[in-house]
Length: 217
Image (tube, rainbow, N blue to C red; front, side, top):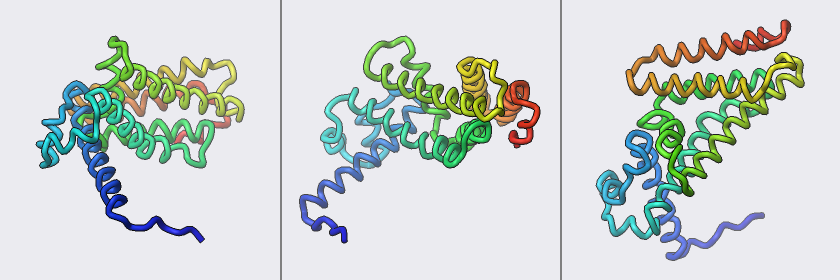
């Protein structure tokens, strides 16, 4: 039988500190999605949370630490809202098409205040070397890798034609999604989501095998 840890004043302070840190980071990802990671400041966060700036300083040793923690938190949310929902128990073409739909739904539902967090962060830091760019690039590479792996799975299952370049197809699907996020955020036009879904569907229909088109529902 697993025993719970004793409820001590020190443990309560640790839990409260972690709860405060998570509350700060949840506000931080919304600000950063709309105004960029450079738009973050402890003063702004303190104002939004109704706390003192000095009280928040203890949770982050530097602005870069805050930014990196914000990126990590955004990825946890993205993992929960998109990847886990889409591919849990699914593989191949079914998993790929589910991922496309869940990704577009996440944009349409405005999980982040300013749209897709990583679309914004990638544009903000794509030409700025450093640890934040490296972190964002790693996450985006993992995302493209997930798309590519699902395409490879679909090819192994006989669902997508074997001569299709999986990396190229993953690049195209990602480009459709980024375009949808841009138009949806800039013009507040819900048709952008529907256009991107139609483009993804048309592209996948052009590469699936004859007995697999029914999986794109």
